[in-house]
Image 1 (cartoon, helix red, strand yellow):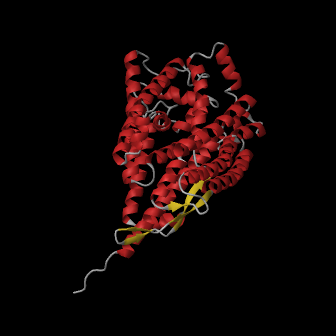
Image 2: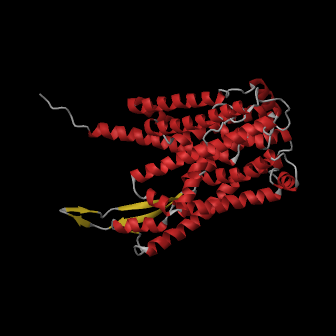
Image 3: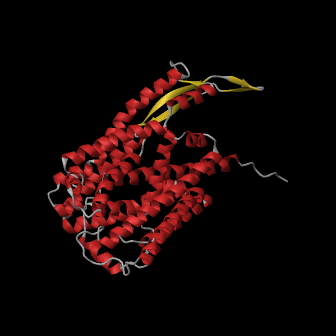
Length: 437
């Protein structure tokens, strides 16, 4: 990795892209620190220092601490990710969206525009929920400080509008990184959010129990190595292309492979499941936490070490992994594309038999991939059982979502940097020499 970065900084074009990406990351972090108008910063800091665990840690992770600080970028990248997942689910149920995805660049631009509209709608809903929790004290239940200087309707509208506008700016920053920077912009920003919250967890554990921190760091090294191994694992389906004449030229006759990753779904199932289990807790906080339903949620769906919570968490991850893989990878479409260009899997007939073979292979790969995601997501729960110190439990930093985002986005970004460096190297190698006079 260090060698790739050194080579990247030697290429002027790639170096400019890296600096441009870093500049936008700094701007993104500044917006997460900058408080929204009307927020009592001292009260928020005091309540943030007192409160730990439960909904507070969940908000801390998915917003990089910005939501708890009620900043301009308080909502982070979560509305856009949620909108993207919803659009992928709707494409399966709405034929018009599925047709747009197949229309090429123009159709994809329309789908992207619809995703932006949905992001703004979700941002408006989430901003109103966050401000409502701030007014009622639901964000920090154990803190009685007043988080807003003015709780009137006009100030509430101003704060909500500021957070929604901040979400629009975040989308713009992500698209700028994708177009002019290095890597996928939205992935880089969510990576920034997770990494921003990580040092605070480590420092808290060091102050509470240095020995526990040493054990966690050693275990974290092996955990990162295991995640890298699983993220790189893939099944390569051999594909042979027959020779065919196009005009006067002969095409085909080459051998290649179709890579199928073990973790084909990536980080999406864990994020989606965490959000699904977070919604009942949020609804319980908004309603005041009273009533039989709220008590049942607080008893079974808030405590991470409860058997019902663990079972529900694992089943949701496994089920959504299978569902997400089925909507993002269509074996029939891949088989038809291979057949159209004269490709076939050796020993398997083109067309429907190839699709059935790919579906069978993908199903066998998805099973260990789903169990891998479930086991990785249950690591914090196992740590809660092993660590007897409640304060250390609440500050455990090596969650499945954290490690997956850090490792997955890091590997993808390094691969894209290496690809751009190699592209420039080949361009320089193939450049025609200047004519001699």
